Length: 288
Image 1: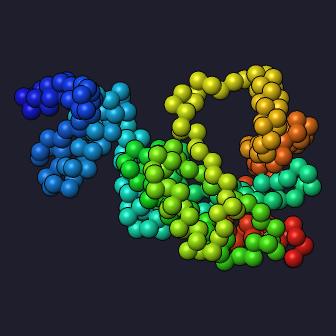
Image 2 (image 1 turned 90 degrees about the vertical axis):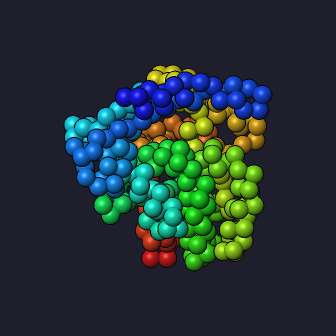
Image 3 (image 1 turned 60 degrees about the vertical axis):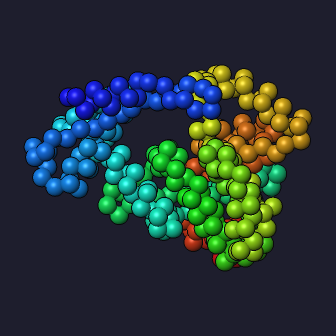
């Protein structure tokens, strides 16, 4: 139609910004009234679904709504709404789980990685891979990240860290969070509010920082030759090494042989809800 052609024509032209020309792509979803719906809210939702279909099929195009549209586009729209609602409600639907991290020196749990979980009452469990990606794109990741960190601090405030033997907690940060100049101050303020020292935390930048992450995956044979050199590099730099994803005894023994300092993975324990993690640590320290 004339309207669609006009919109495409607008986005085909460069945008002048700070002495340079920049191009933007456009994805559009369309609906027909009254064939696709007879009220505004229904039409807007279906237009959003069609827009996601346009993005899924290659972006920079127009997709018309159809009842036959792939269900993944509908689920993605529902996930985005759920994440936006959670961010606007102080992330109450987000939970923090803890996956124990073992020391190779004495075989004890020294800390844990804090992992966010989102289980929406209507659409069910949303994978961290999905909600992090969506939250990064819609701008909610900074607020969600702060709320998750506060939940971790609240947990530490309410347990006997020393008695349980928790020496550190690893917390994930999105690259988008790291771009914020307010990040150090925000985190320090939250930790101070809950009387938790900042030196209890190790911060990990999530893999989405690497645009071509799939391109650097190597085979098992490749990993076998690559890891010793990488570990030696870190050791010469006086860095402690945490290896994640340990799933078998063979992997555990190999990493210990290579001189890794800490190990983490399903071989030891799955991520645990706070109460179960406390019980896990109490069992290790002989309190129960």
